Length: 134
Image (cartoon, rainbow, N blue to C red; front, side):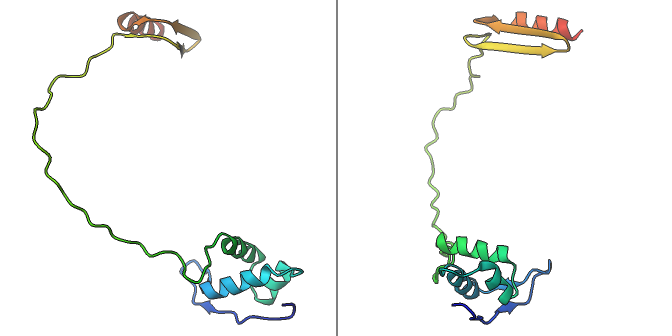
């Protein structure tokens, strides 16, 4: 493959000035870059593209992203709305826990450190934190 120059198929660039190369061009250049003894830098220079792009296209080729079929088109799936039976709704609030059990809680306020182990009364904890903030 040495000394072979492929046609550079460049489409007009986008607003950022980047060239848009066709999928086929990327695939052909990536296949050429996979040949034994081919210098990716020389191949990129011969086709006036950045060598990093050729390396990326080669990775994409190996990952199957530059196959002839290309990515699968997006598919729309049907949606069916079903009515749910209206059952009794619970208006009761969830049970509130007044204490925390197990584990360790460490609170740092300014220069004070409070470590809490085991069951802790919520009201007492609130009083301690308020006194540290004062």
